[in-house]
Image (cartoon, rainbow, N blue to C red; front, top):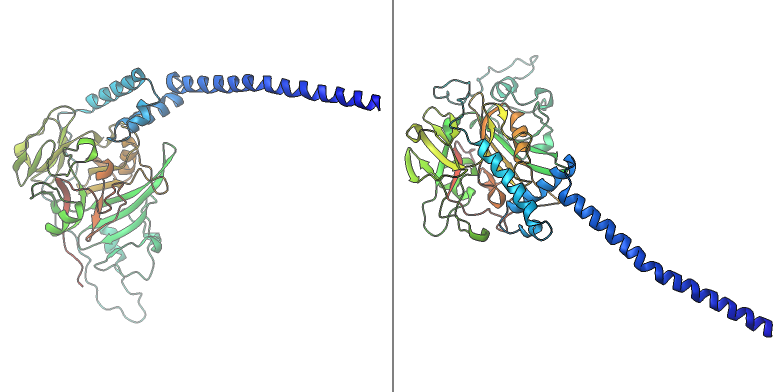
Amino acid sequence: MEKKREKTVILSSGGTRAKKRKRRKWPIVLLSVLLVLVCLYLIAVYSNIPFIKRMRTLYIETAMNTFTHKWLATAFIPKGVIDQVMADLDKVLEENMVPESDLPPGPTSAPPTTPRPSVTTQPSPTEKPDMGLDALIALFGEIDPATVPEDLDCHDLQIKDIEDLGIKTTAGDAVWAIDMPNGILIMTVEGKASNVSYKGKLAIVRDSSRVMLAVNDRAGYGRNVTQFCSRNGAVLGINAGGFVDPEGTGKGDIPVGLVLAEGKIINEPVGGNYQICGYDYDYNLRMGYDVDLSTLKYAVQFYPIVVLNGKNALKGTTGMGIQPRTVIGQAADKSTLFLIIDGRQPTHSVGTTLPECAEILLRYNCFNAMTMDSGSSASMTYMGEMITKTSSPTKTGRTLPNAWVVKGTWPEE
């Protein structure tokens, strides 16, 4: 019995020593973890390794270019690092300033009215019916004819929400709407850029003479894009210039920068990084800080230029971070381009940088383009309904001081 008791005591003593050793290890393990985390933090904040520096810059620009989420940067990153990133961005925006863009190489006179499909004679029983595909492709050369269903009657086609038909552009984007009477083609653009997903809509307006700037006509509140379209008999519209927006609570009734409609200045231009973007009387979309206002019919101010004279104007930069985006542009043939990228919605679309917007537009022969007020203002309306997903809590879209709209023909009921 004595031997058994002695063995038990020895075992108990050994177990106690093992427990003590484990307790002594925990502080060492915790300290090691903390040291690793500190090292990772220092690398993330201060390293000049190109990939890490780009991701850090992208993160800071994304956070600092919002009204309500700046704390995502200021709470974790030293002020000096943030200040350097924003100073570098200011330099990019300063270099983006140009007196005036070149005119698109297309005709400088007013564009012809939108081409209409030719009327065909009744085919004989042995002939294949003419479904108007040639007319469709003549108007919208961006469409890949091999993807158009054989039984689709393309004469005077005006249909939307048609992604299930499988019609694609030659750039591979899904066609969302075809509107031959108004010369409008709308695509869904989606993909991955800067390691995040984006989704939005790109509209091509073949006849730029249909585009106008709709301006707010009431005090105290602006109007959303759908309302601007409704009040101006427009079939398509996107948001345009910026507005006074303290802490993201602005009501859209006080514009910032130039507002010019029907050749009349409604709001005076401002300086800084703001540049002019507008249509002259020959329907050329012109932009720059020194455009002669007397030559313009419609114009607003914003920044920066995204595509300049057929080239990505922000290539090699992080382009003010990842955000919802609104861009207006013009192709070399003088067609107008409206681009909306949804954002701040992780399960739908996070957003894009501006250089990535430029690459989307360049797929469709964009010649000049400038970003408009973006963020929660970004929205596109077609035939009376918003067709993009705004990040604004108001799902009908924010109230705004003005919008780019396309006057046109509505389908018969």
